[in-house]
Image 1 (cartoon, rainbow, N blue to C red):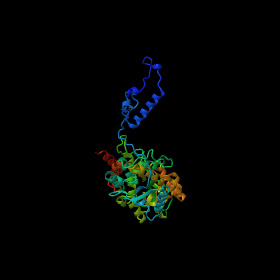
Image 2 (cartoon, rainbow, N blue to C red; image 1 turned 180 degrees about the horizontal axis):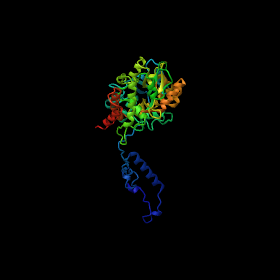
Image 3 (tube, rainbow, N blue to C red; image 1 turned 30 degrees about the vertical axis):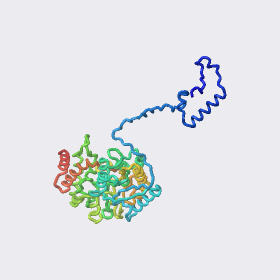
Image 4 (cartoon, one colour; image 1 turned 120 degrees about the vertical axis):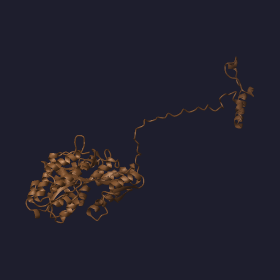
Length: 458
């Protein structure tokens, strides 16, 4: 059948002048069409090579894979995307219970409701935990982190001591770069200290407290005292927690003199000469009857306040919250007199920390904590709950002006207590030495030196 196809090209002599007849071309086209329709094209391959053969199949090159350098201990978190309901769990101590029948509780519940209204699809579940001990806030947080991370709270209220412990254990998340509120200038210095552990912010403070002096003017008479010598001159019994395991009054008076609580290496330390001045005050007060022997039985500010309300004394040193939550009409609050030249008192307080391991809920948890930390809300809530303000812009909510001025001096002079580690070393030795002086079992000089030496004993 190859003779049916004309030879073309100029490689043969005379081929360039040959012409193909129209009849032959029509016959060739008809044969090609019939061959194609019949599927028989193999016989054409020798004549028209490559015309009907499939193109060669190329083997694709393997894709280039870029292997990023591994970053040690860094696990990228998925970007939070909110879909459906998000439940935020809020752990609070009993005094912050929004279900309680108090004005402060109603304000808090209204605030929580407002947050949910402004954030559709977000639900807030409140759980009340004991402030400390078995089943308390810190112990429950520790247990959940170890055995049931899904049960961890989104937001948790912690006092200063527990906040420090939780941060050092890695149970809560730092707020640096996460919360804009933490960078606000609207903080009292003590509140900013309260929020930080090793200078890293871990909480948004909501409630402050500090040691203050309270007395009954009608019973005591005279002008308000400004110094401890004026307090002693009244001769009226004054109550304080002489058996406090942390010896906070002793430590406050010592620090008001500029006393150091740790050395250059960060170890617990005391200065015997300054501590002796504190114990000389205790000795003189005990001799005059200003510090009765009953003070050696009180271990907490709550016990002192209860005894004061029962009329066992007309003077008391305890925490501001006991007075602010009741505001007894017969009592006047005062800044705790300093033994040094400047005002000074020690503060404690509560802050909201973030513990949620889920990135989606954690973002909303920060927003909830900031919402509860708003100065306008805390101005009203702190007054109803009986706590010192953490924001300067909240102070004006306290009335009358005389009380506002007193609280201003307190919050401006307050500093947080030493760290848990330092306090665990100083508390027992200061307690023991202070009790020895109050019970007339040791001189101020001996007691101060004994305390210093006990710190040096391994």
